[in-house]
Amino acid sequence: VQRALTLLRTFLAHDGELSAAELSKETGLDPSTVFRLLVTLGAQGFVEINHATAKYRPGVVLLELGSRFLKNNDIRSRSIGYLERLRDEFGETVHLTILDGNEVVYLEKLAGLHPIGFMSSRVGDRNPAHCTGVGKALLAQLSDEELEQRYPGGRLKRYTDQTITDLEELRAELARVRSRGYAIDLEEHEVGVKCVAVPTFDHKEIAAAVSVSGPVDRMDDHIANHDLINTLMEVAAQISEQMGWGRGVDQLQ
Image (cartoon, helix red, strand yellow):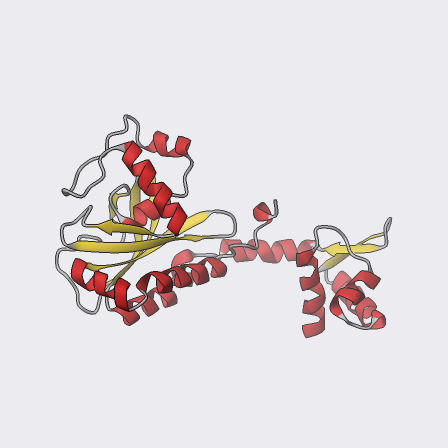
C-alpha cells in the first residue's frame, strides 16, 4: 500500500503525464514493481494510461475522492481541536468566524477560562467587520473593488473612540494586516477588549478567521510574554492545511 501511495503522490509534483520509467526513477521503485502497481491502480480507476503516449495520469477516482473531501470539509469540525488548544493555552476567549457582506458571523465561540461579562459575541451572532479583529483579518483578503462594494459611501459606524470610521483609513489598516499576517482590535468594538486575529484558508481561498480575545492588560501580557501571535499564526496554518490550502487545483497557476 505504501508503495502504491508513493506512486500516486508522485503525480502531485508534475503537471503532465509520466511514463512507467519516469515513475520508477522518481520513486526509486523497481520498474517491474512500478508496472505491476500501475496495472492494479489502473484497474481500480486510480490512474489512466494515454495509449498515444504510453504515459500515465491520475484517474477519475482520485477526482471523486477529492470531491468527497470538499463535501465534508466543514471548517468548524476541522478547527475545534485547534481552537481548544488556544483556549487552554492562553485561557482567553477564542472565536471562529466567516465574512458575510460587511459583517462577521460567529461559527464558534469558546469562552475563556477567566470569562469577562462584557464580551457580547455569541455563536450565530453578527458583528461589524471593520472594527473587529476577525473582521479586519477577513477584509484584508479582499480587493479594493470588493471593499468599496461592501462600504458604499465610505463612512463606517463608530462604536468606541478607537473605531476606524473612514474607508481610506480602514484601507491603510488592512494593508498593515496583510503585511504582518494578523489583525488587532484594540478596543475598537468594545471598550476594554483586545483581540488578535488571523485568517485561515481552504483549498482555494479565504475561509474564516480565528481570534483570541480578552481584557487589554491580559492580552498585552500574552503578546509580550507568551508568544500569542506566533502561536495563533501557527494554529491558523495548521487549520488551513486541514482545509486543503496549498493543494487546490485552483492554486496551481
